[in-house]
Picture 1 (cartoon, rainbow over the protein chains, first blue to last red):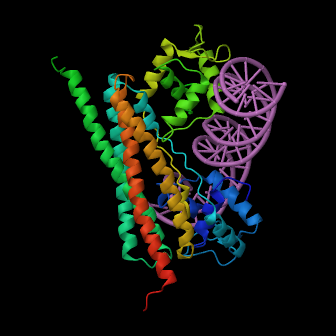
Picture 2 (cartoon, chains in turn purple, cyan, blue, brown):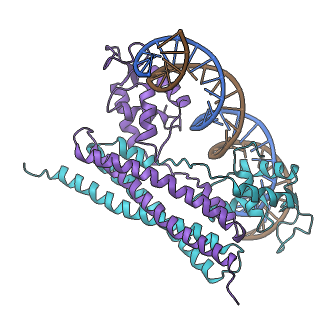
Picture 3 (cartoon, chains in turn cyan, red, blue, yellow):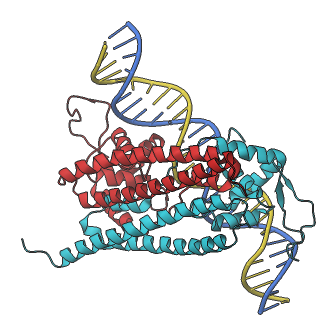
Length: 196
Length: 196
DNA sequence: AATTGCATGTAAGGGGTTACATGATTCT
DNA sequence: AGAATCATGTAACCCCTTACATGCAATT
């Protein structure tokens, strides 16, 4: 696992460090609470769970799995082991690799010209809608988290991460508003050319 | 190319739409002007150039390549064709796919707890330094661009893209300052526990 | 003459998504 | 009983980076 550059294993360890979970539950958590800065697919999660179990970093929970009357036999809950916790802590110390983001929207904007103002306006509006929706979703989560701060042991860290998202979304909204105005102006001038 | 989901081809078309370039020059441009929102490697650029040429979307420049006395034989300049321009314009119209960003820093923060405040502080500081450097680099580019707005045909669009970067970096700086303060406070309290 | 940088290219291999297959459980 | 959802898993396939190989050009 040390030679591997994939971070999937650490995501699983990180989540299992808080509570015992099945692969399915992990996927759900990633798709909600981590979705704005991370993603994992089933095709990564399930094989990685097996790999971690084979390496002794996690183990299958043998306790009665039928919690709350559902998922009697099929679900496989995993729990983190001592060496798993150790590996996780070691990884936290390693330097963060430079992130490589890719904004297709910016690519299109960069390559476009005044002949496609209307199309770009649509793209930016779509971008604005998507991120506003995401921001509102997390706004609820944040409010809920602030009410019961003792549920998650590391609530202060989660708030830091959420704060990152909020600042990001604010700047998105800011930029969208500004850019939409510019594009609308371009379109207006094209329809009604200023006399020169 | 239509069935392909890679955007490398469009990046090449987009850049060649402004000026004739070699693969090496394309790489340099991506690594500087597009670096904060896109990346491409030689392993993608060169094969894709051949594919585009085979598909008739770009063509090898047959003119005397020896520009400014250097790169006489080896360099292969490409130029975009009419159908290449058409393909590019068609792509600009297609909806932007949802971007998937991955911030390893946030992952580590999310999984950390108060026992690793010092490590996280380091990570955030590193993040701050990297992005401040990038911001300053693009600040120069922006100033330079605003002085001669007629060099690039689509300068207004480039300014929009740069503005996105600036807003992003501002929010990074904002968040870093705030988060560093919180982490320093945590550390101080650990060294000097408040009486309860 | 040798080193450094420019320039093009390829092969290997890992990372990751997508699609599909399968079965259990719950709901209507 | 049938449909929807939960849950696990696999195989194919693409995207992309990395490492290497090669040769030309310019510099010392």
